[in-house]
Picture 1 (cartoon, rainbow, N blue to C red):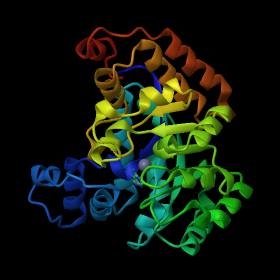
Picture 2: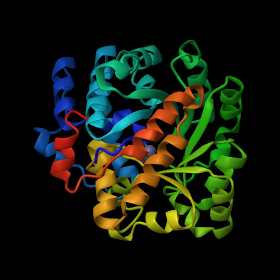
Picture 3: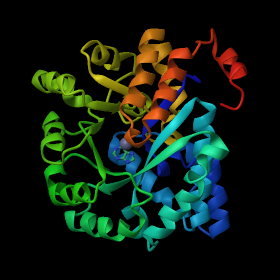
Length: 343
Ligand SMILES: Nc1ncnc2[nH]cnc12
Ligand SMILES: [Zn+2]
């Protein structure tokens, strides 16, 4: 769906399509333990978050040079633009690369080659958010923030991702305090597989401005009430939730109930190469399977811009919101593609 939207929950490493993985493997002399792209796609059957993370980290071995990261980001931005993404706030996992011997500068500068000219090449404005791996130590997160200091002109904020259960937000209190002191925005994954208490902790201890996923807030009515009252954005990822079995079926996804409750929901793709769809595909899925009408879809698109870190460019935010308001919904997907060539 080419409805203009911001993507706020997107791991750049999760956009590594099998074809690009094999291309980079060949370029870098890396052998993948899969015969071909079909065999690799066959491995995309996940039991839970951890079974996905195992493959996600394994495939990162093909990313070695600045150009690899630039190619990865360029490929994502082209796909995102084709699905109506006008602004993307992109996560990356520096520790997943530095523990393989890469310099953080290789990752940031490589991504920046694509992001720095994304408005001209793809018509997509961008921000970069550096995530700490919550199943690594707090010390490692602090060292990563220190290593990132020379690149902070390229980095808007910090996030928290990887295996959630057993790694509560409080573990990262100090590094989030430092990030705040450095002027960085703060978000964190919470309530994907972890309990609602992790969402509360992310808000109260880490001072996050958005909650990534936040699905399990529904188990705590007082927390839902608070999230509504404080207008805390949730970056939901419906296709991801199905693939990682956070919900049983897409038809049973609580997004409609969450919108009815007044939560500030956004729809995003998480790791689109692994979960069967980019941002527009997630919008298509919630329209087709959850029966969300045009008003709700427009609300989700508006929310994405309202929840984005565009405070330094309110003029642009207003322009994007006007694009949402002016959008005319196509009658069919085919027509949608035809009416917005290249978007
Ligand atoms: N959905 C997800 N949850 C936690 N960590 C992740 N890293 C990449 N995708 C993730
Ligand atoms: Zn995520």
